[in-house]
Length: 445
Image (cartoon, rainbow, N blue to C red; front, side, top):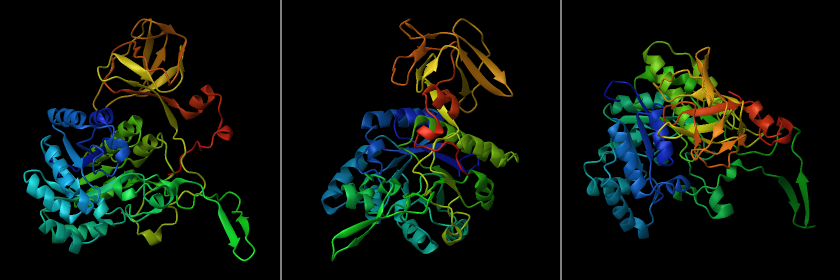
């Protein structure tokens, strides 16, 4: 656990901006890496060695940690490339290397003996026997399989008390066994365990019956309202169980999935779990508070997955009616790192009022000037725009999401402050309704 004896909160870092947002919104540590040998090639491409080094320095300056992902599976022809990559990553001084295979564990220890090794969930550790094998290889922490139960974590810890255990608590769930899937490779040639999954399980599928003798093919119609998203796993959401997880005393780190998700997701989800952890230790745990915030994010429906309940006890882990749905809110804008300007993420006009979501521990002052007004209503801050002016001085009646100009604020705000509005208002501004969009409006918990 962390130095203050609290469980660690570990958040995704898909790029430098999202890394900084996660850290400012309450993460104790973040994980990410370049595209080389990482299981998130899309997010990894947003980091190069220079920007990843900047992110590590940014975290260390704030007393936070960065775990570098090198968690794909090597072919024989790539072993030398793995060695070279780990050597380059080690020069950046990350706080751990996340790897997936026993061979790479050995390579990491040989090339970077001073950097702790964490075992990826891709290794599918489910029991104390397998955990002990990796512990004997020198692994400091195991990111257990998503299919594991809390009781099994307790069993592992009873056998190997010095082994750190990390569990996923939020984010996308794989239809397969912790990512062991070949559907994407079969259909598009994008191999999930090489980091390039095309998320084929999220697509709608039609079912046909074919008679090889006559050559006749019939489309089979599904039951009305059931749909065809037959492999679409709901998103994990364990916020309501954080108190049970922490009370077990066997979990060292709570992990949020989502390196390819939005900056809004990185901030809001991290902040919700930060509050859940802190409230538990303050004996003020209230699951409804965290769920309200998590419901603001886009999701595939929520499930509490398998940590508390066994897989055979679950009958709500898949979303058959849709691939993804809106959350209760839409991002309107994101304040820049220096806090003096913001950039539009959703159409905003003069006279609009947006909710202000602050980084953890931040405060702001109420103002009322020619550019806008900041009010506080029931403990929540709101900003009303009186003028929309670019940093170059150009005045606009409205600004759209495609506008990349930095826009002036009525007063400086904490860096990476989020501006948002309710989803029905956002859709109305676009001239859309629930009936005209394929995404559902109300999240299910």
